[in-house]
Amino acid sequence: MGERKGIRMTKDSRRESVEQEGMERDMQPEIREFVSREASNKKENKQSNRKRSSTDNRRKTNRGKGSHVRRQKRNSEEQTVVIAGFILMMILFLVIGVLACKVKLTIVCLMAVLEFVLARCLYPLPIWIHLVVLAAQIVAGVFAGQALFAILAALVYLVAVILLCYRKRS
Image (tube, rainbow, N blue to C red):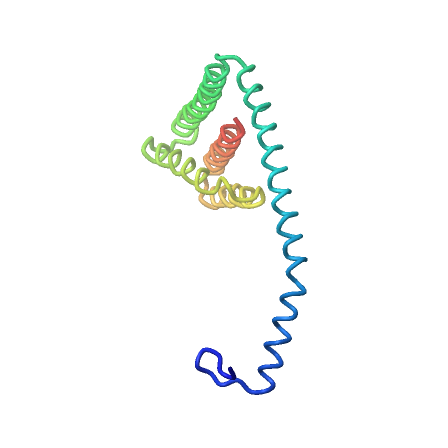
């Protein structure tokens, strides 16, 4: 009688176990009430979710069968605008870089690719970092004696970032 699971109980531990059992008996009605309240809340939530899902399904079917085709076409058109804008900027950069700045074609092409890669890598960063990159490019170009070429490279970077933002929003 005095032992519980092979451990001999003292008078204090017996009192504590009797007090705990008494508290458990007192708590049982509250627990039952809480459990029943939670169960009823879950049932209500399931019923409201069913109502919402049935109205959502009706909305989806009312959109029409060609809505996804229109959305794909719009996304395709937006992608075409982004690619066309970037190609146009690259052509201008190549022509002005070779003819006006007297820079070799391979260097101009390499700079164009590097500007796009830099824009793509730094795209998710805050705007002030882009401004620092632009300023650093222009300062480096001025020190190198190619200010016009550095401004063109910064412009390519800026256009690439803007086109990436446009693509992300669409």
